[in-house]
Length: 340
Ligand code: NAD
Image (cartoon, rainbow, N blue to C red; front, side, top):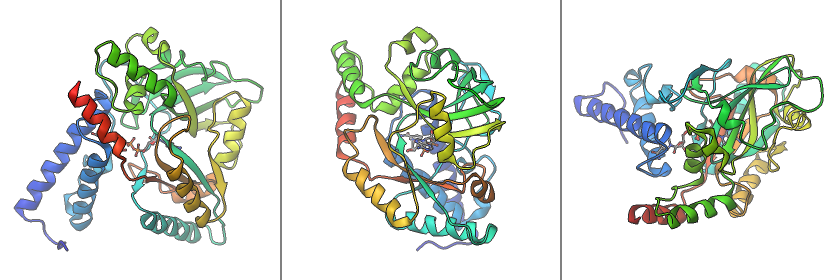
């Protein structure tokens, strides 16, 4: 095992190189939607960085990749500040790690709010692109990418071409102001057809539906976005004035009643065993869903308990992403890409 203590020169070098490499991959992934390594390879680099930082906390600076939400804002778009910050998610890569995380969150809740029981809102981790929709009095006034979490890219015109995102909310009693976060994705069926068309036209296919969603949404010309069959499911809310729901799942019910697209797949589960069963179920049935997934997201459902647990500068402490092991099929797709 590696030793903690003062990092020597070689270790500082390794750390600096790793941080640089991670920044370059983030830029290729978020800015250009053209990653050069697989997500599993990227996750391994990131994990190594976190390991080094855990052993040598003095290496961590404010601009370390572990302290920042990865995305950047391209100069091709108008920058917009989110009203409330957008976060990434902490990852776990095995059921053992997940159990440790669930126990830690449970202990955190017990410490801050003794006697509370936790309901786990368990969702599919949609392999798409996060967007932030700002509605004022029921009208969509702005849509932005996540960017670095503080500032995103204005993609309002592109988002308005997505049929399932309402310009005016249905019903009544809308909050004065609410930021609705969701994942824009390329539906699985249409993704296969898109890639067939790309190859037939002599173009390189997209490596995965996430890249296709990002490439389609971050177009200068909304008419290009309109040609792509993008869809979205809501998975969170940000700043809000005049919204009274007490849990995230109740909020989804409300949003659904206003015509916003909510996922057909999430569940509110009372115990950890049920969370693990949910993960195993979708591990066996991860294909044939409406969208691709790269894992499962588990959230503390109560807003009061979410507030009690809080955030780091990069991730909420009330939510975690379980990542499924990488699949063979990704490598095959990459081979196709390389050979085009
Ligand atoms: P992430 O994708 O691991 O998790 C955070 C995001 O998950 C959220 O911002 C949200 O958009 C999304 N999400 C999907 N379903 C959700 C749900 N139900 N509830 C809440 N959020 C949901 O983190 P990230 O910061 O977006 O990016 C890291 C990911 O990008 C990793 O998977 C990493 O492998 C990949 N990446 C790859 C490369 C590369 O070069 N291959 C480079 C950078 C990042």
